[in-house]
Length: 164
Image 1 (cartoon, rainbow, N blue to C red):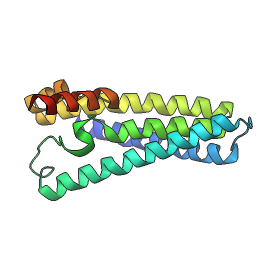
Image 2: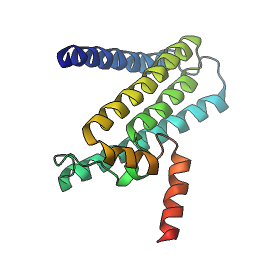
Image 3: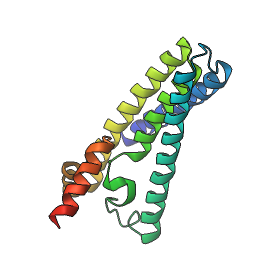
């Protein structure tokens, strides 16, 4: 059973990677196809924000790994993980939206919608696996940290610091 699930996960990861690659290709093939400067600029801003957040998330994971938290099966709650539970997926939403706006082409909207749907499904799958892996610790983390709402995460962190 777990072997079958692993095959499904691999297939999903491959499909996800292909769709993301298509988004990049379409963004550059159909770059600014509607010639809307404001939309293009907004796309680049969202894309850059997503890349920055992805780098911060990667740095948070690396720091946790260097501390040994990852190998100890501990829920990472530092860095970006203190603000959102899925900072990589959060970042990829912004990258996808940015690529759609950069392209300004109908096929990019369709492929982007599929990619965003895959991201949503991946988040749900990861939540399920994390509950199984970490148990009550992850359930408590879910109550403290929003799934992908960065603004709510920042507000919660500010309130928590004020309480201390």
